[in-house]
Image (tube, rainbow, N blue to C red):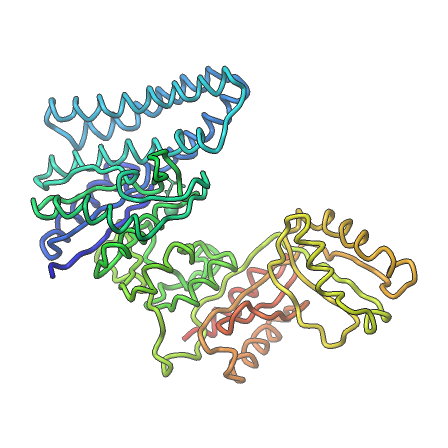
Length: 468
Ligand code: ASP
Ligand code: MG
């Protein structure tokens, strides 16, 4: 079996001429060793936002903005084509296609402006245009540099349901289409350059996989092709042990398990979305996060399960800001059945989600964290849900803290090793940092605690100093 790799490039990797020069180099080098190389690309950085803003402003009848956006889209793509597609005819052909897509943008937005109404379906038609433009540009740039490449629209490969803006793939139908669509290209020695982010329903209507969905595209293609590896090319050296702006000695994590990645993503680190990488990791495909701007760096490898002997150390520390702790307290709660269930039911009923639940030592209070913006609504909902108990003082008080931060320490198996929790809280104590609450992570691979918003940077640095 020839070796197959899927390489996904994010918006910054294709957002400028120097970045694209790196991409061309990377694809060329990879192609030498991997006879079946597939490229997936995002839109040029900022383009999806611009398209979506266009469709939003169209709702208010802002046709001026639509015209400005058309000009801007043309200019961004043209400037890159001028540098990277030297042949006049080839450049003209690509820019004609891109111009047609920009016209589609204008038509769709003006229709939205006239109707004063848009649907998720029409928003996907607009949002997907960025990738439809970028694949054409990148494929032509690759051809100009001697690589046989062809742009492909993922609407011909990936079949989803019709949940527009967050569509879900049908892996079986997709596998058939991927095989039929890509194999002939491989046989010709050609590199397919596939649109990230978008897909289509069985009827061929364009859908998108949700913001940042190009990673998911790469994962879906990797899983359905049974690729050997999937590489996510971005603009940092893989997944970092903390935010380097706060923790100067943050470093790349060489290897992370799927559960560790999920935990990091849940607790605010900007890494791969767990949903997107699951198909790849479950299929045992090697997944790497690499840096387009530092291609020789080994980056981070995501593995299904880690070797048990390697477990037990702290891998990363991350923070979610703008949280508040809500406490329900009262001496009479001890006897009241189902308080927790009713509390979380009331929160869910207003569509808010609880990020973390703290373990109270007695049954006289329940404490949980959620986004600060939600706090007032949640308290009102809880006061309604527990009106009777508040009346008879079984519950004394339902209240929220000031803004706090959840700090999460991630590392598989860490919670089973008593010394680590000890050294963690010792380190915080030495810095005189007050821990407001300690919480249960959503799996065994993390410990979370809450500190006041003022202490977050010190807390991150104190914990990070424990990483070996
Ligand atoms: N271009 C899309 C977005 O900005 C998808 C992606 O970049 O992953 O959300
Ligand atoms: Mg992205």
